[in-house]
Image (tube, rainbow, N blue to C red):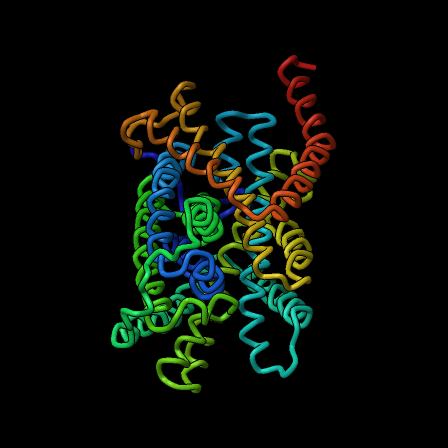
Amino acid sequence: MVLGESFVDERPDGKFARRLGLIGATNIGLGAMLGGGIYVISGTAAGMVGPAIIFAYLVTGILTVFTAINYAELAGSIPKQGGGYTFAADTFGGFPGFLTGWFLFIGNIVACGLYALAVAHTFLFFIPGGTASTAGLIAVIIILVTFVTNIVSIKGVTGVLGILNIAQSLVLFGFIFIGLFFIQPANLDPFVPDFVGIPQFMTAVSFIYISFVGFELITTASEEIKDPARNIPRAIVLTLGIATAVYMAAALILVGATSYTNIADSNTPIADVYGLMLGPAAVYIGLAGMAASNYAALNATFLATARVAYSMGRDRYFPGILDRVHPKLKTPIPALIAALVLVSVFALPGDVSLVASLADFGYLIGLAIVNASVIVLHRKGLSVPGTFKAPYFPLIPILGFITCLVLVPSLHPETLVLGAILTLIGFVVYGLYGGRRNRTHMEIANGE
């Protein structure tokens, strides 16, 4: 029997219900991937490497393939709520499992802050004299709305994601199609500016990495996806392939229709280029797509953040109260409240570039450990027959591990300092809960 066939859609134990098919799972991934990456931070990234940003998106997509393949295998053998954290916890266990969950939790929280700020900047366009602080306040209101949406139902969230994905896709694909008629070869020459070397290029790759993490969010809702061993790998492949192609095409228009220097300092690059191509009124089309895209990303990532908090609460690495699911709504309300508070803290200052880079820090380290967990999965005999398997074992897990860690030093120094502080906080949290959890497990094992 294929893993996943024994699961029913409605579970009588008061936990989650399997309501999502392939389309719903893919909507979660695309909802996160087609968000802040191209609508918000692509202008800043173009300022780092010029027209070579097109190639940077391709390289990032290729580097991400290894991690995506490993995730697909892990999801087939461990179709449980919590995504990368659960994979590491069920293979490594102990401190490595906690550390994975902690870094992915950080990445999700800060990414939510980025997406909320992106939506806030679309409103800020209509507020004369609006500042970063104003954007932060608007972002908190948007986060609160997202919190309420997530309480109601995951099916409702994915329904919203589906509608928003259609809306923003129309804007984004319209941008690409129209932009083909406005590309000026002079804007692409030189393709790699003189100031760009390997260090600068890798900095841009690490900066835009957050745009490619959406596939990870699919696995955080594994217990809510029908036939997970079949649908999760397919959704991951679809999400990564579609998003990489769209990113490259949109980046071509961004730096082909105007000089990259015109968007280097913009938080609304697609809206700005829309205006340059079709006139000032077209800016509103880009803003509408940006709002829809990033609100979809916020919903998907907020959903994932709560599921990681729930899973770590379930395993007693976080307070046990987070391991509660509403019996009727089937949503983890305490975990959603925790996500609401923490995401608001990171969004409030209103610094888009900083939150994007800090999210990259959390994701890269967390995903590196997840890649390594595939090796442990095989060595412990936990790989389930009949499910997806990464080819050329152990080459793919090793490449996934290396490609994540090699990007960390390229992040901004300020990000590395803040990341180190958050890492130390993680050690404190583990000291408070991890030691107690391990003692409890030892007592159970010894029959005490």
